[in-house]
Amino acid sequence: MNIIKRKIALDNYTSREQSNWGKMTATTFNINIFITQDADDMGISTEMPFIAKVPGQTADYTKLNIKLALSGYTFEYMNGTTTSILESGAYPNTRYPGKTVDMYYINGIPVTGLTEDRLDVVTSYDATMKYKPGFDVSKEATTDYQGNPYNAGTRVITNTALNPITYFIDGDTSLPIKTKLDTKRGVYFSTSTATTRTVTGTIFGEYEIPYTEMYYNSEGFNETNVHLSAETKEEYLFGITSSPTVFNDLFIDRGRATVIQSHMQLGEIRNMAELINYGNGFYKIRR
Image (cartoon, rainbow, N blue to C red; front, side, top):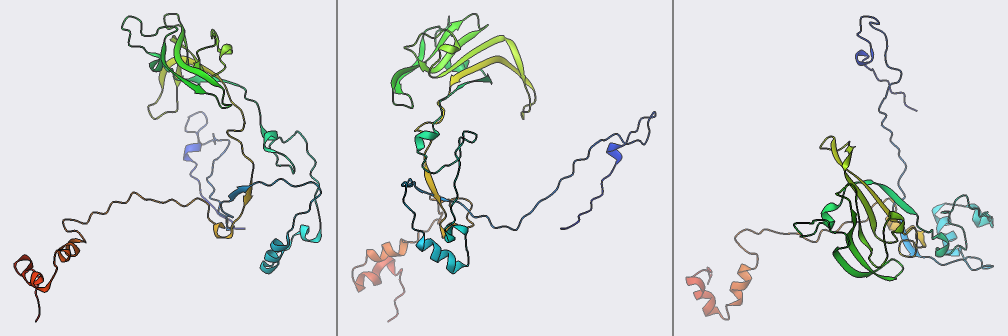
């Protein structure tokens, strides 16, 4: 263990008021500590197809045991020690033996929050009525994550002089949507221009924006975003913490001359006479 000593100037933490001159006003001090470690990162893993364990069948670790023994490593499983893992619902994401990928699926839940308005997306070209209820600014036939087809559209639902205006983006146009609870697909918005909220912590400082709520039903964890694979450590990737990056858009500026210029000239010469006469004596021939 190393002992590192630091001096802290107390001027900023000492009162300069006449009533309590020189008294300490700070109750805590924040000190930056730089922590280092000398352990080598194991590096990235390679995802391999997961093969579920067959009940009653014992894995063959012969090759692995030989490799570990030659490297000087020993583990308890080499002596026949086994571990029984008790499954419980306390940790639903724990990898238990015998679990299949569908056991990790979780149904989606409603998600709501505050955001910036998306009125520009539902603006029509009608000069007299920019936000037309029931008019699809865009629409297309698509499918959800389960492959179920539906007609997705972006439209204004209701407009009470923008106080509020409700609309959805990529919602199901075949369903009657009056409130956010009717939204099964897409994102539901409600914007009130008469009410604002303050946005802070940005590079532009504080500013006011219309009060906008958003709501949608999340897809949860399903067959489109969950997969089950075995993480395998390959020896040549030990210590490599990120995948290699290949830059294949290189541009080489060779200037005014090209490297194949002389080769093109020689390609035009078929015999010694043409070599002597090429370019009115361009080549110096030694006899």
